[in-house]
Length: 153
Image 1 (cartoon, one colour):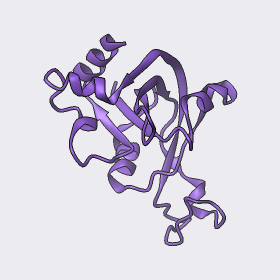
Image 2 (image 1 turned 45 degrees about the vertical axis):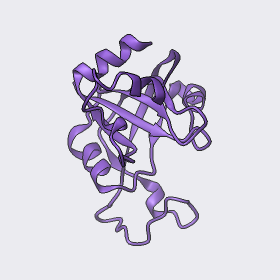
Image 3 (image 1 turned 180 degrees about the horizontal axis):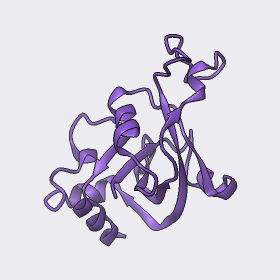
């Protein structure tokens, strides 16, 4: 099993939006970064777990746990001229962008804030969310990072 951190701006899609989705499941779309696309295509598998992280908000932090429920597949929004994620250079015969489905496992009892994670940088020296300049919407976590962060809850 692999572990992940998936970032979303709560104004765009929040943990509460996922909780309100049918069967607490939805597709994770809008990825427009090749490294993240490659994570989705090559490394993320059904059954993997991820932290749902609210970014670009007043209190950024980990809000819940999700499970990957399927392999990556073509992101239909890349072909929709009216959608914000439209990509005119993407070819339907060879889609450039992917999405996958995630299911809410549970909300955390409390938000584990970015500031709190920074306080544990000594125990989490390679945690990508704490690296300067990291803006990826999906990042891998080690088993140690996953387990340690869960103890913070």
